[in-house]
Image 1 (cartoon, helix red, strand yellow):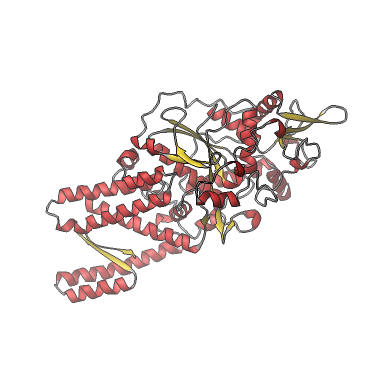
Image 2 (cartoon, one colour; image 1 turned 180 degrees about the vertical axis):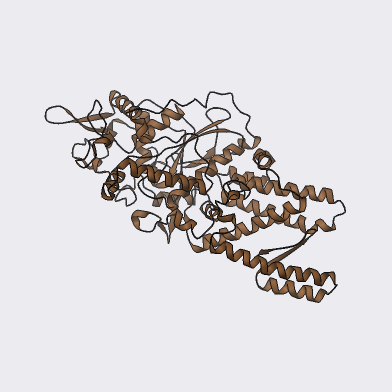
Length: 542
């Protein structure tokens, strides 16, 4: 029962100078149901805690959507000049882990570690930055026990005892003692601000919509007749007869293991201390997990998060994507057919609070986006004779980015608008490239192309999509042009089209313009767009 080493306090250094654009950032808050201006608790610094995976089985696309969404949030804060402390936990002990490990003939900790590594690999392949800290629940038992003691001492929890007065290991939060319960999700007390909120409120669980929640089955411990109130929830649970002996911890209130909610209160407080800026997670965690977490944290005497943010679901035919519902797509299965860049683009293609419908069309649009992005970056780099370094791209401040991109990102991380700004910049860049050969001031023209290239790559980098950054450049994205057969098809098409372009170039050189135009028209009819530039002709899919 040993805690991890006390982390360095990343919030004690001097304030950093945030970009001027930071003053315009507005974010949604689940508790207030409103978009409001963001002001950090500590100038120049942002503390974020995001609920990570319960590592019971392989990651699927629905899991990773939240990770990508909050990775973009984090990257925008970093582009705005903030120093970000980002904590994402791992739930490595849980009823499902214990039960599935037993069924598979595994040690529970063995199963947890196997799937923790799978999640880490999925995050890495999809370009999700590693967290500042990634604590495991099992490493923080002392923190949880101390927190429960505080809640009991403050009169907001009770220990269940047997007929002889001995503690059973069950401890429940006393909801009736806490008048603020329901403030995070009680929809009747708040106003709906927009259409996205209406959808998430209707589909996501809350105090008003707890009912038969197929996405969050009731914890068996919370069905105990020993509870004083049906709303009370487990802080500590007596072990089941089937629980292994090494999945039990001795405490003043009996032998057992933690309830689901207490771990995040303990770990967020340990790594981010008192009130921190943002607590994030998927929509399905809003109730009961985050509602209970907020209540128990405050009942222990600590401040809760200043703002709560929830990413909406990935849906398949309108239904939440979930393994328990039989419609979950594993990350390895999706990456076997599509490049990691394309999958990340698809997962981040809509604003984080909007439901994301997963379909072949979603992936086709993402592949088309990649083709347009890669084509411009390759052509622009060739035209200016180099690619800007990663160091240069990462150093670009939000203040130096196009105004329409900044406005979209500051509007509650509106990635749809941000993507539109990127493609507006690409169109402008393509126009500059097409005119480059006709410009007498070629040095000035090249500088304009280079500026467009830097802007496009910096905007993409803010979304985790610069094709010349890791993991894309090292091949983790399947060459970033496609995976498996897709890549082979692209290479074959490139060879065929390049032969046609070479023949067209010869025709133009011989002043056989009719033949040159015929080749161009034939390629156009086949869906191939041709761009003529000073370095020759290039192609892309329309």
